[in-house]
Length: 392
Image 1: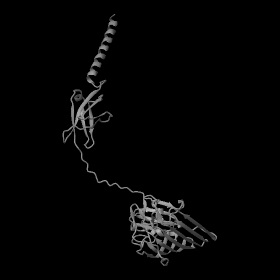
Image 2: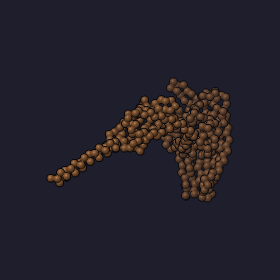
Image 3: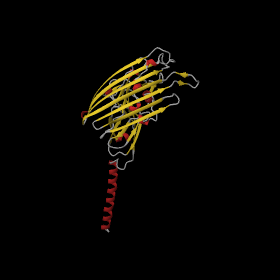
Image 4: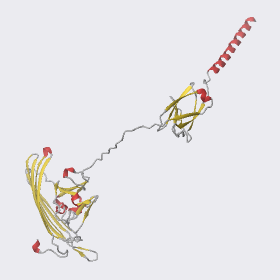
């Protein structure tokens, strides 16, 4: 019996010791198995003492954070795992600050007050550079796509965007590119200066002496960017002629075009003959065009007719591979061109042009020269009168 009592006494002491130890551990470690606690506070600005809206408060080394409301108040609920925490308070335009808070202070229910200081940063000037990729030419027009080429090259240019023309009569439409015309436009033929307008009233703009049947395409360079053609504020219009075919043996070919318009009585005929061999080639072209006076719907006749004759001869010699010598001669005759928008008409306009060139393909170099002569007769006669036969 005494032995059994001894065993029972030992077991009773052991159980008492376990309960006492658990109670002691609970009293020493208040964080073990603790519930969430709540941290409350406000954030103010140090210069105005006004609440800071949208400030970020984050517990360091965790993803627990909060954002202040319209009154600068925030609330964070978390489970503490240490005796203190570090808060990082930040906002755009303020210097970030870090505050250390004891867990015991949070458990006491204290509302914390935090202050952040505005931060001004001196930044270096920022320069924004934009490099626009310019496509040159900005527009190209092929004459082969036109069902019926107009009598004047200026009229053909009006088919392009941002291009219009000044019409003073049936002949010589002066092109206008983006509102700029006259000397502010650079009109070129194969890169060379076209015939300059000799008349102060610009009855004979440079485009009036360019026959579209000899032109392959028209390049339009808007603005003063095509520096290869010289200075031009408004833009450059370059008429590119058809290239001579590459002959191996002697060849000869040609074409004839003719057309008529019933409204104005416009009649136009163009003819070209070209040929050559591997060493040389030539092109002979010419044309005749004319229009009658315009008759309106009310039967009123407006004097706007003219007659035009022109021809040209060009040739080239291939001296050796990559070296080519070219020369050309052309004449243009305009007769009885009536301009109802002006105080006078143009009875005679004779233009003579001589050009030559040397091409060296190895260095992509070209040397060209051009000379010309122009004669204009502008009698101060009535627009309803016609020139006399002796004026031709």
